[in-house]
Length: 508
Image: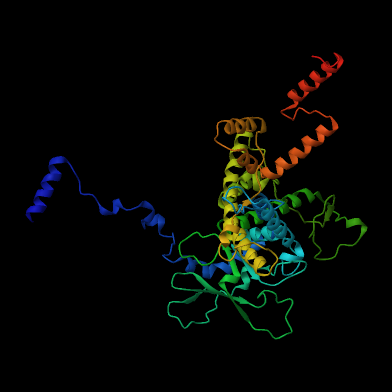
């Protein structure tokens, strides 16, 4: 035994220390004891996990949304709160040429008007069926169901559009997950239908010419199996959960299994309750009374139960009626527990999915609503940066190149004209009386501006002020006074003063 070992043992004996097992220093969740032997976890990349699971995940996710009320409600809730019924509005922010102060209202109005006209259903969509707001909603719902969506940019005029620019929405199934066309550059590679450079930037996409699941409508014309599109013509939208992730995963992936079992449980409970409510009575007699005066054939048995039915039995036969006990008191609590887990997996509140507010009060409902809004605002920014800004910039390029817009100096300073403000849908006050008072105090203290408060509600200060002035001017022209006008008291005082002056012969 070496000197160091003897000294160490003496030190431990002196201070009462024990040898520490190195295994005790590891994480408990990383141990491989008897209770965790069945915990399977692989050290694989994001793409390796996604590639084998993505088709099945997408198929099951769409089935859940298509056939279950809670899956459909989850999609409806997220799309409604992120996109809203009017979509995310664009406000051009071109500044004046001289001194660079203030906005050039005239140019901004021209850009916004042309953008609005392009957003018509026959202009912005290659198939002529979706307006720009419909495209926003479709992209959002596709992200939830399939985990990703592809927007193809087509530089061509459609319908009444003055700009040679339109969008084609491609479902994720159109991308060939197994395509490997090869490349002459050793730094480039194909991965799950996308060709990347050495920095993992997409170069091109390999799409099927036709949807692989469109077997019910086979094409009679001979077309190429694939179309290879350059990356600058494709916008690939998906949420990135891990580094170096190439494809998106359905947002319902963590809860698909639970939703499938929940749907089966609900169906079984309904059938059980239906059978219990339909069973009435069985009648037997020693003489073997015939059913409704007819004959009883050998082997004839009661095979169907229907409400209000009384069935006769032959001599010697008996029936044991099971105790269905349906519906029982466990159904509703179990459903609530499952839906709470589903809501947590998706990232929105239980009340939003179930529409059940019986278990919540004002405070808890307000708290969950505010937390949901944080999630929705985050998704709004994702769409603005990933879809809206990219579409607008390429649309503006084509609008100028085609002559539909005349913007001086655009070729040298395009960024000056691409500055826009996107106004997503806002959220109404939960407690208007308290929150309006709080907003007023914040404006007075300089912590917020009126524009910020209005934008939080989904409004535009320019539109509000213009509409407000029109209201006030109309009321003045008609001699009407309303307490909604902060200057009402002063106006009334001026009217009273003028009236008194006239009654006194023009003197006050």
